[in-house]
Image (tube, rainbow, N blue to C red):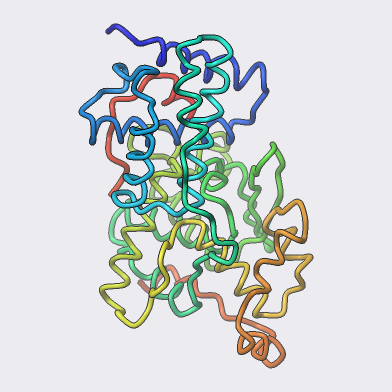
Length: 341
């Protein structure tokens, strides 16, 4: 099939420029790829234009304004997510405009695209009661249910970013008296975080159901998808949206914050640790923040919560006992994006 100049340069961008020239980490490249998957979905859904038909002439101020509105109204993305996707597109257009004059107009259009301002105090998180409800939503009667409850429980227990969860290998798990898991974070940095006894049991049972073990399958990803060897952040977002919607129907008095996402689990863990009296410097190390100033956002909790910190120095683990108990739409994507994700 004939490809446009836009697609040809995008392939060079992902295959050569990002990994070799800029030496970007796999996490960064995967995040960029995810942004273009969303752009392709917009053109397919709203313009009836396949990815291989898109060219620089299609990237106009009008189409980008429509793209932003589509992300807001159809995808329900937060202001931060919208800005990230426009920034991803802008980075590529800057690269392309230095090599092809026809890309300059598209770069100018992207540069003038307006996205909503990101409210600094906006970080929706789940209460401890809401986490308990959420982690009991997946039915542990089949492989997908076992995977989902393990994934969501680990997402909360480890405070991992969605991409970090996708990158976990079976060999990154250490199941001993003090079980822990190695997370591969931003900038190729790694950190080890403890995991609870309850989550350890869930992981062991989940691996048994898959016929895997820590000794012989160390180089395999903990959470594969139906289409590849590892799940994607988009899949995790869909799972979170699915179970939050189901939980909201079950408990109408809960889940009243707008914009819940996979990152809400990370926020929730940090807030619950703070409420339990865990020092901020420890929370910073646990989350893998560069500066404690980033972690200080979690100090913006109610005075009532501060009072509870002084009285309650311990919180119960909401992960269910193991005995108590829509994937991302398939798209016809270029090979270089599939490999990058």
